[in-house]
Every structure is written in structure tokens, then in C-alpha cells.
Image (cartoon, rainbow over all chains, first blue to last red; front, top):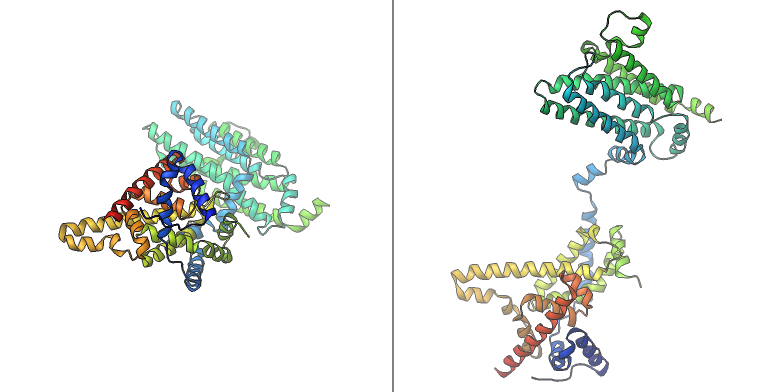
Length: 287
Length: 181
């Protein structure tokens, strides 16, 4: 084998050391062929080649930095805002909602109706209203004051949290309804959804509005639950005290009232959000 | 001097100067690697170098700082070289069924334009199985450590050592054979 020395002494020692590491038993016998490898040299690029490559790649990098359509959707700020609230909203409330809806489904598998309403229709609005009511109290107002310094306003943050809590309750209840409709032949999906959807929306809006008006989340939660409890209890028996009957909001689960209740719910939310951002009110309480 | 890993992170943040610095640092070495992996086809090696860096740009979010950037870069280049081999083999197979002469002229070996001194080594290297050639080039030309090669090839260090030992032994035989001829 031709063995013209291509390496200086130090390089040769380095090569020997590398061979000792790679093939300890054969290092010396492989030294000659390892030296031979140096004979095959690659032509180096010129400085101009490198400069041209850099210029092309920088253009490529610029083009790659343009976000794709999917990236634009993922980085759409309202979506980011809503997703960010997922970390803030208390997980135990969402877990409780899930548990209650699951309980409603389980009870509904064996019982058709309680006082004219399915168990799922009774339980679904309860947890949505509780979760939404707990979104706001006077402590939260101070936090929102701090958050006012962020690009998203306090109203927007609260609206995003409202959407998160209500949205998740909506999803839990929808899944529960689908499970029920699949499990029981006598349960129709759409009427079942309508039986809880409007009461849930109205009660959540009502609880939210009450929390903002009173500055006390417990008040919003308790009063909305009281209304719902009265409604469920007294919706069928005709002989009842007129005041109790009024407090039980008799039209709450009446299909005829559904459009009006949805409009009222929207108005309550708008009014509550307006009150949250109202400067005099916040300044007055902070001082 | 900034480390490769820091420059890669700079690219993740959109810093084009970091890209320039990395390309300047690795262009020559990467070209040498791909030149040898493509059997001495300079133009093809240049294309593959560019494609390697384009992939770096598009997949930079997958680079996990502070893992060694060099190993990540060579893994991309190695995958591109392997893709090239697969395509070359496919072309070779198709051509063989139609015209044997055309197939021979398509083979990467025919593109080798070497100095006379390196011709023996180059042709011997080209006759080694791809994993062994890859390992020898990464070790004796690119001077990667055994651990880095293992990361590039996704195999244990023991396999790298075995490929080096067997590869060098086989190369010695091939060079001798060639010189005798």
C-alpha cells in the first residue's frame, strides 16, 4: 500500500489516538489506511460561494418567517386570549362541573324526569351558574385594575374568562346529552339540549350580572341557585304562594320564553361588562 | 466566539446574522461531507448543502437548545444524502431494466472527478456500504466524536465503533486491491 506521509507528527499522533479509541486492537494496522484517507480532499468553497449561499438563505429565512394560514389562526389574538384564561380559571370549578354533569348523565340513565325536567337539565345550569358567578367579586376587581395596564382591557379579560367557563360547561353538557341520547332510545337529543341550554345561558348571565352588581361572587351564586331551585321545585304544582311563584321565574324552562330569555341573558352580560369597565365605580371602590 | 447552539437559538428568534455566522462556520465542512457522500459530485454537494440549510431554517423550531447543534446539522445532511442514494438507486434500477450502459453512466461513481492521488481512496470509499462510508467520513474528515456520530446516525456508540473498525479494514483491502490492479 502506498504510504506517503501526508500528516505532520502532531496530526499523526492525533490520528493514532483516534484509532486507539475506534479500534483499540487494530490501531497500528489501520494507521496506514487512515492516513490514506487524507489523500481525498474536497475542494473548499470560495468566499463568494459562501456569501451567495448566505444571501439566498437569508431570503429563505425571510420567506419562512411569514406565518402560514394555520399559524395565523393559532396566533389570532382573541383565541390566544381565551386560551390564556384557561390557566387562570380555577380548575376545581371545571372539575366540579364535569363531575356534576356526569352525575346528571348517570341519574338520567335510570330516571326519566324529576318534576317535569330531566336530571341533566336540572344539574347542567347549576354548575355553569356557579362557575360563572365565581369569576367576579371585589377582589377580582382589584386584579382587573392591575390587568388594565395590559393590552387587553379588564372587560375583555372577564369576557374571555366567561367564555371559557361557560364554553366548557356547554361542552360537558353537550357530551353528556349525546351520551344519553345514544344510551337511551326514548331520549331525543335536540329536545334534551334545549331543555338545559336556555336555562343554563340565562342563569349564567344572571349570576354574572349579580356578581358584578353586588361585587360579591357568593351573592351571585347563591341567588341564582335559589331562583333555579325554586323554579325546579314549583314549576309544576299549581297551588303555590304568588311571591314564591314569581321568584321561581315560571317561564325559565318554557320553550315559548326561550328567545326572550336568550336576549335578556345577552343584555345582562353586556350590562355587567359595562359596569366592570365603568371608571367612576372602580375608582370609588379602590379609594 | 458564540457557540453553534447559541447561534441556532438566535435563528429561532429570527436573527439573520446568526444564520450568516453559522453558514460561514459550517459551509466548507458540510460541503466536504456531502462532496464525499455524493462520490465527489461538487454541484450536487452544493445543492445538498443549500437544501440542508434550508431545512435548518424551516425546522429550527425542532432544535432543542442546548443539545449539540453540529450533530443536529449533520443528521439533516445525512438524511439528505441517504435520500439522494435512494433516488440514485431507483434511477439505477429503472435504467438497468432498459439500458445497461445508460445505468452505468447514471451511477454516482461516474460523476467522480478526482485528483489522481485521491482516486484510489475515493473509489475504494465509494465501494463501502453507505453506513460505513458515512461513519468514516464523519469521523476522519468531519472529526466528529463517537458520541456525536452516534447521535447523527441514531445508533449506539458501539455500532459506530464497529462500523469504523470494519469500514477501515474493508477500505484497507479495497485500496490494496486497487493499487495492485
